[in-house]
Amino acid sequence: MKRIAVYPGTFDPVTQGHLDLVERGRKRFDRLVMAILSNEEKQPMFALEERVGFLREATAHWPDVEVATFDGLLVDYARRIGASVILRGLRAVSDFEYELQMAMMNRRLAPEVETVFLMPSEAYSYVSSRLVREVARLGGSLEGLVPANVARALATRRSEGR
Ligand code: PNS
Image 1 (tube, helix red, strand yellow):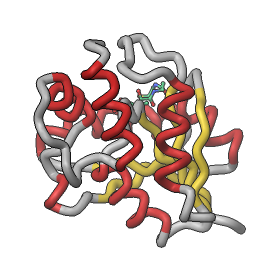
Image 2 (cartoon, rainbow, N blue to C red):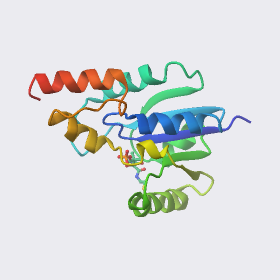
Image 3 (cartoon, helix red, strand yellow):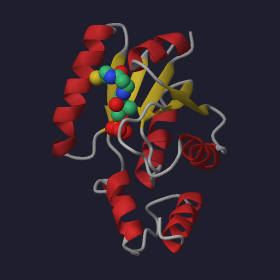
């Protein structure tokens, strides 16, 4: 049986930290599905289609990695695609409480789906989509922290004053 993992998130936008996690995760599963939550309450900076595009480009060289969108409960989506694992990244202790709550709730909803945490390289331990958006908005360099397509899109946004 194929081991399928789902790596869910907002990915607004994808960072090298996310991609570092994919690289680690894909070696441990037969298929890794990056699943972008589509019914965002918080107003994302990038539209769902743009985020899908960034992820597809950034993961195109990994044949075992797919990019998809989902809405509703994550565990329902995981069951639908036959994923037995939810993959999440843990950067620092500050991530832990939120992640623990989600993992426990998801376990209660779907005990057969296990949440697995991986830690990204320490080089990305402070990188978040939120900080990336902020630094980009204020004109700072994001060299090495986001893929090239995201860096270009952020620069365009800034030049348009958005
Ligand atoms: O990148 P994020 O914003 O930390 O990802 C959060 C995400 C998408 C994993 C989480 O909000 C989620 O799974 N939402 C789907 C709705 C759901 O299943 N909620 C109950 C889980 S505790």
